[in-house]
Length: 115
Image (tube, rainbow, N blue to C red):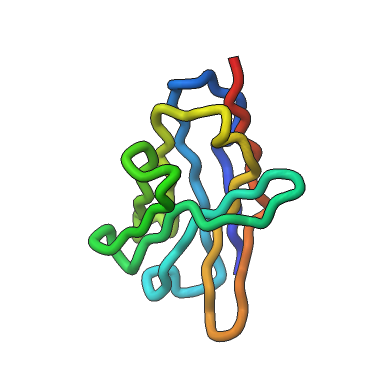
């Protein structure tokens, strides 16, 4: 299982960014996917989750209405569209999937929201 995040960077408050997570090594269409984020000194928090297609999604209250999770099963990729970002969205963002008793994580991509 390999998860590779990309798309992070520096963005101004109120701006937008799209993160991507390319998945390989497993049957992508059979598993839900999640995005988490972590800041120094804090736990890694769940940001958004998506089921096997775009019909079932979940968002943390802090990002609801601003972030959108989606997936392209033909490309084995999950996305996180981040709009109207805030300084408190600054974090390392991780892609995740869970199989049986095991959580699989990508290496993370840094998002910094600052003027």
